[in-house]
Length: 137
Image (cartoon, rainbow, N blue to C red; front, side):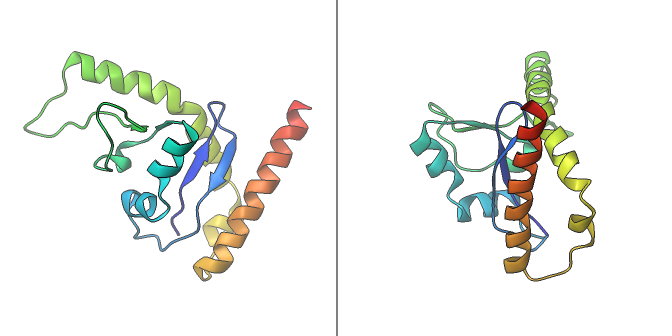
């Protein structure tokens, strides 16, 4: 099962996409859900992992910021490594949110059609937000 999520800077879930088959690429899902258009319309931006590299993004007005990718023939400069480090620090709360979601055993054992999985994911979004608000409250 594959789904996209958006969180705030503290790692609190804001949105979960519809569930798709696990073989779906991040960029395909983002294009299908029109993530860039929705973020741009809301005046927001997003920090993403390297799975979102290659998603159309206006270089002069980026909506999604990803890190730099190294290969055998292209080594990262010190500045690029530093930029990746800063991005990883900023994304840490988001990764904690994902870890919290993955702790839900239902997601690990879920074998159903994407429609039912989407309903479950949306319910988890509500429950997670209630849990977070109760802790703050």
